[in-house]
Length: 326
Image 1: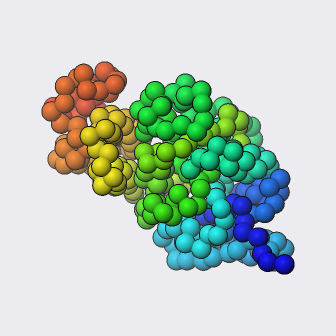
Image 2: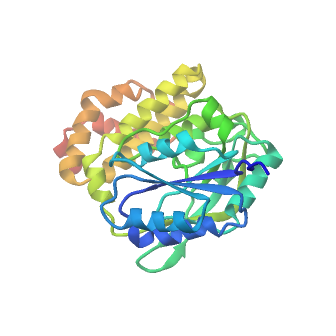
Image 3: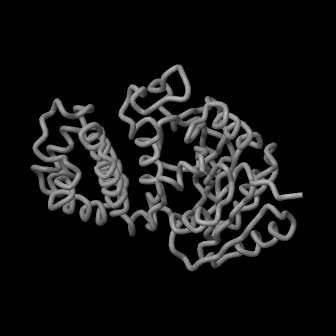
């Protein structure tokens, strides 16, 4: 009997997450949709993560374990993507977990609607308190009452309707590979360009109004330290998005949306950093990045959020000391 192509390839980048890895993998292997492959890519872990993965691979033939030198979750996702054979692609972070019917619901929705990707609702799992917390990860009010839909049917900035992470979506493999969508090899914000590139070129998008994934928070990781050391990554992601939009001939249509999102992302990143790193970002914005993002010499009417526009003016006109002590 010939082997059947997996319906879903679940790609899991893994790095030093031994405390949360089993719930993650268990939530995939116990899925009601059984014809899947799980590609776990160890990104040079120094704890017991790799041993745990190999233990799963010995027990379940659907699990493939790949290893690489530490290079980022983006690189690990690309490694998994290169060998994936499933009809569809799911990307799960190794400390998060799925509802047990997630793959079945998302796969069926994708096939029924002939969508190129399906998004679904999700929430937060507060690890320290061991409880779930609602979160707005999709702007549901911006979505049309029919499926599948094109981004032009969305009533909000297409870069603001879905968050730029990949784990709350299921992608058609042919769509991803034919458009050569890959993840950036950088420490943080390595999936933004992948997600937003898919949003702007997809002809058919669908979604599921159910919480099918859980994003673990407060895991005591070094993410805050990582962000301090990779404060430029959001810039690199935005520039890749900008260049993709231009290359696809969509810039005249999406320029204003991009500029508004770039301002939103800039202010969020600026507000999330410790003072020393914040000053680096502030100065780089003034020197180069505001211009690169297309944020200079725009009238207030160009921007969706008047408060964000006022912040932009402050960055343009003030020194860092003035900006932080107003």
